[in-house]
Length: 141
Image (cartoon, rainbow, N blue to C red; front, side):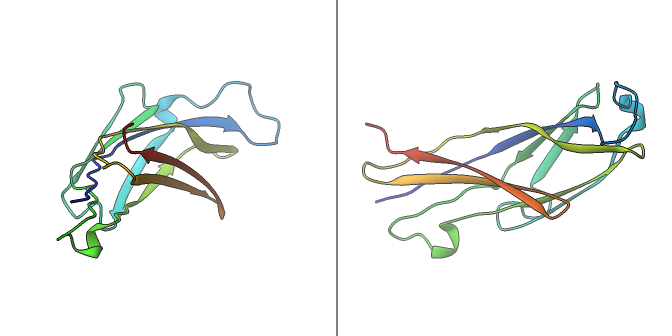
């Protein structure tokens, strides 16, 4: 029987950087930057299954996805072969500054039978621009 279980822990850092205008060299303090809303949608994050915490220095957002599990194999419904979760973060910050994903860590587990592979993909959208990162999870050798 072939199956794949993935539980993902996502944490991302948002970093301030100056726009191309005359601005002070230092970014805004953490108190000038606020996460004012989070919204989740997708088969990997049903309502009530995502928890989050903002670091005390207001630079790191850690998210835990309790139901982000994909499975494949005999007896598994095709609707469980892949899962997704779209996260929207609403941020308030001073005029003249912009934000980007500085770092993203993905942690979890996978049980992949010989001859199979698993894939984890992440896509980030900012002002219509999207970048995609992916990793391939080979079976153990």
